[in-house]
Length: 386
Image (cartoon, one colour):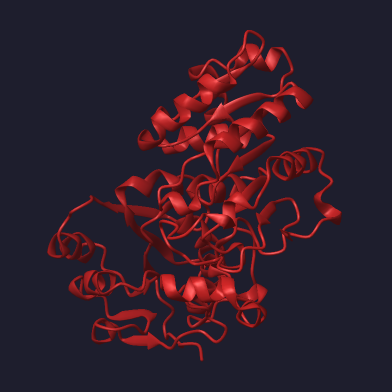
């Protein structure tokens, strides 16, 4: 049941989530919040590392960042100056609710979870259709592999299990629409042009070579990483078929991985750029916007690319595209590939057995999916492909 406000809130604070991909998945809810409260001033509280994600976003009037390791009381004091009427807490952590409580905001709304309900004025019950990302034990994984009946009765979430519906449901308690809309971000043509100039891409554009993106890392852990040698093989095959120019993305921790892929793909006639650890968040967004397609693991840039309109091809292993896939569920521009491993998704950071979920996704299949995405023929394909 929606909460009624008389008068309507004039100053709304949204406590944002902490990870890049999750932040992108909150954008449909923020858009619906803006539609409901067009006259309100909406401020987003976000980790400093994500501040620039929200530049130019129409759902947000102001961004307040907090540094890694910044204390609860410091954040609370910072927020008190805003004199907010209402706060919406998107993360499920106790800390995020405590920050808002310490700020003295009179209306504080978030999901009911352990150790935090007393800090909220309204603790919203778990959404019908919510699917818990439970990590099985090694013993359970082995039983899934050995028992066909368990596989038949296994993980089968509905489309509405996706994480964007969690945020939309919470927004709906404020009277906003819970109708899904695609995740979206904003990058300006000026920023795209500046990125082309900075990273030396203007000559490639003159040569009319299309830019394809490659993101072989994944911060969550190795269980989300399709093997590097398969990225290399797929990229080589695609490059031969399209004369594309690869832009290799990643964070500073992915530098060695990206360098190895760059070295393996480099030939006298190849065209590629190793950009791992070299881009700001806005530059990453600009370059992803420039790409015709992104081949990536399940990681933050996958979500960013989709929210900017770039098709993505993603081998999924330990995680679930039904729960956290890029874009709006059912968007046929994206190819989200799964194997038939009965133990997937396990949501583990490291595979305790033989990595069969991602080893079961072959190079030829991924290369074909990239070609399909590039030629815009995805309209007749299923989103989740086995």
